[in-house]
Length: 309
Image (cartoon, rainbow, N blue to C red; front, side, top):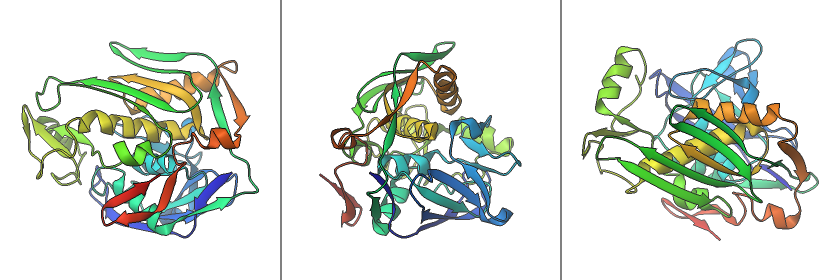
C-alpha cells in the first residue's frame, strides 16, 4: 500500500546558498499523487519531484517546471520522505530554496514522525525494478545501478584532507536503515571551498552549525563529527534523495564512486532512456516489507531518538 502524512509538518530555516529565510510545509496528498513541490510565493506553481525536471545547478539538486518555476536543494527532504516510505506529499515552500536546517535530513524525519503517517490501503504500491546494469562515468568518478530485489547503496569517497580521507560504506536500505544510519549525517565542505563559494554568491546561509567544515586534519564545526565516517554517510543520504526522483521506489543496487548530484541524475536519465533496463512491478506484501520505510514506528521514542523495529 501507499503512504502519506497524517497531517502537515512545518519547518523554518534559511536557504544554504541564498541565505534567505524560508518556510516549508509538507502536506498530505491523495494516492498516486507522488511528491510535488509547490512555490507558494509564485501562486502555488507546482514542480514534480521527478528526474526529468532536474536542471544543471552547482552543488545541489534543482527542479524546474515547464514555466520556469524552480526549487533547489531538495535532496535532504527527498531523502527523508523516501527513507520513511512516504509516497505522496505536497511540499509547499515560499521561496526558491529548501531550508538547510542542520545540514542533514534528521529535522525533516523528526517533523514527519511528529505529523505521523497515514496508510492508503486501497492504493497498491508499485516499484521500479532495474533489469540490467546501467552506468555513467566521468573521469575516475562513476555511478552504477544493477539489479537487486530491494534498494542497496554502496558509496566511496576519497579526499586529500586527512579529516575525511578515504571512506567507504555499504547499506541495505530496508527496514529503517536510513533512520538508523544516515539521516543525521550533515553536508560537508572544506574551509577554502566556503570562502570560494561565498565569493561566487553561494553558501550565503552556510554556518559551522549547518555543515561540517574541515580544514586539512581539523573539523572546525562545534562538537566535531556525529560519525567517524559522516562524510560518506552524507553522500549516501544525498544519493537516497536524488534516487527518489525516479518516481517510485527502486529495486536496485546503487554504487557511487566520487559521484554527486549531477552524476546520479544522469544515471537515472540513462536508465529511463533504455526501455529494456527497467520495469514497473506491483509490490507484494513481502516486497513492501523490504522497502526503506517498512518496520519503522511512526513516533518519537525519546527526545532526539527515533525508534525502529
